[in-house]
Image 1: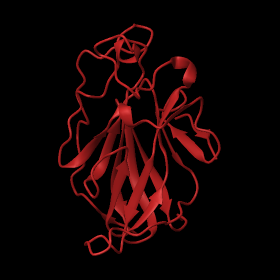
Image 2 (image 1 turned 45 degrees about the horizontal axis):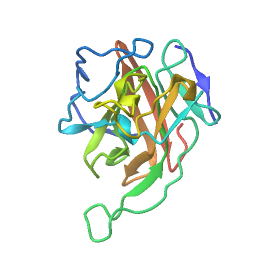
Image 3 (image 1 turned 120 degrees about the vertical axis):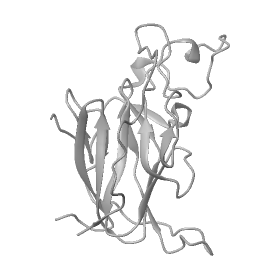
Image 4 (image 1 turned 180 degrees about the horizontal axis):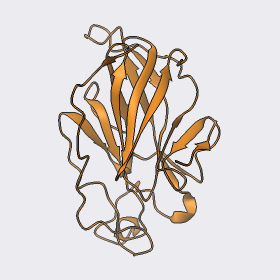
Length: 207
């Protein structure tokens, strides 16, 4: 595993989601056609982070993040402690939850998944525009495209699509993780045949 630098718990689910997605007919950049994650479907507990909700494209993860996976990595997550921020909606069953924000970075030509495996209490992810309290697993990418989605004169044009390879290799979604108890949250990142466990320090440090 190649690692690049940028910047006890109860199982949340006893059965791991197996087989993240099946992609048919996807072509990547340099072929002139569109690579899209629209063929990946939502299911209970699992949400697809759409390409149109990308907020930035960067050349590398940079300081404070670690890239996981072979050949420079397929996903990058924070390497330091995440700070707890706002509380959940007042008057709801989530008002005691706290939000720790972090950007989700995925290499633009790859599909990556992020799944919560263990946490001190309850936890769920929120990136892109997935529904609140709906996801303990996300799939994002690929969003590499120089095809019709990037051509303003094309019927397939998608406003906001992260076009142009010169903008960088890594695409970024805003979001973070909600927890009702600070601690070390274990997540599983995966792409293709690769699966890598990662510890997220949410509101406190990990051992």
